[in-house]
Length: 329
Image (tube, rainbow, N blue to C red; front, side, top):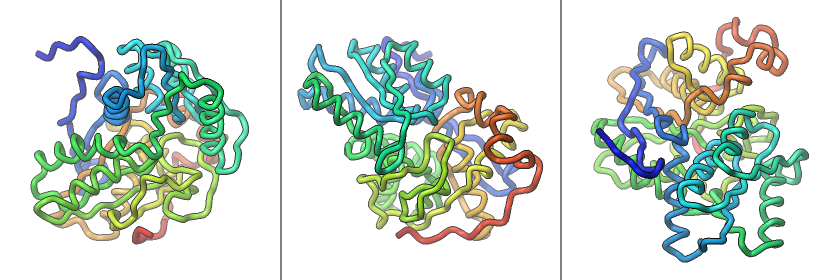
């Protein structure tokens, strides 16, 4: 029986769901949402805060500040509360209401930028963070977009955990947001004893891999500014998933009792598409599920929200035919 004194000390790292009966392809889903922060972002948040403490960047009067669409903000809110720091999260209107309320319940201050800037809402969030840091030297910006400890958390923890459970792993599907999870896992498996194909799963409308920007309403994956952490030489292929497909995947999982978040729906949809295109006989495939679904009850799982943004038939018509995965650029 685990006994902890701070919330970040608990994280279930070895839970997988066999999705073959749901997806029609041999696919294991690594569930990262079973911790007090509710997502994989707990690992990056812990690593970045502890590194800042080791480097002497944090003082008792420091105020942590970060730009986040949601999950990292919750993780940092929790860690700041447990360590006695103040925390300010800068987000945008796409952040789910339950996520904002959860951050505030944990004692965080939340600023929501209302207008996109150069680089979309992400660019506006970063501009706001920089302005606040310039106004008061107590602010400490961890900067998940450039912080090497973002990826190091997954190099040290996520990828080795997968390798222990699946020594014959052939392909790993990882969602691309800041690309910390993607880069940490990809670098680990590049050094492993056998080749593993790394497939990045991105949201349609994201500019991360050089595509044109488009509307994105679901927070988590995708960016409007290319992530500085990204090194495409570590990525074998990229799958872009339209948000309608994300929603269908989430609802398909929910109908089997698994309530996952939008990022997970995107990754599962992209993985199923890749496996269908490449054949799946004797393939050992793992996809990383970053989050659970409770924070999406007012969006992805709310019928009016879905119909207003994506049309009345998004949940009834079969998945659309989409292009095959493309090599990383």
